[in-house]
Amino acid sequence: MSPDKSWRRATLGLGGNIGEPRRAMADALRALDERPDCRVGAVSRLYRTPPWGKTDQDWFFNACAEVETTLGPEALLQVCLEIERMMKRVRNERWGPRTIDIDVLTFEGASAASEILQLPHPRMIERGFVLMPLADFAADLEVQGRTVSEWLGEADVGGIEIADEDVDWWRKCE
Image (tube, rainbow, N blue to C red; front, side):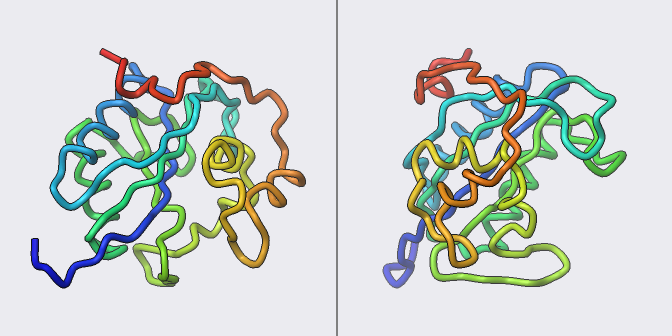
């Protein structure tokens, strides 16, 4: 790693509803944490959430994480997409079933609007299944002029359940 690379914080949203999504998310977090250019700083509790967008599918497991990284925003997204590919993520339909999904939600000091990456994530402030786990460790994080907890106060959180209270669930999942 070059000495001029500084560590910046990013937040990620993780989810899945095919196979063993809890294990897939834990494996993804461990894969990120094992990289020399990423380290997982905080992870939310694990949530069980009703499907959103396309509702005729199984419930999801969702979580959020804070990572520190020397990568830029696009490079971090590419790492996340590569982890999804290694875990056999198939993109057949928008909001459809998936083994794993990893979204870059925010990135310290960066905003972006390209075909591949928008920062902050454009729909995160509308989604209780993102805001609730994100509030576990970043309630005061400002997104689009308001804190995560303020956005959460207006979000639909109907049906969202805590699946695991232990924030170390990802380290213990085998």
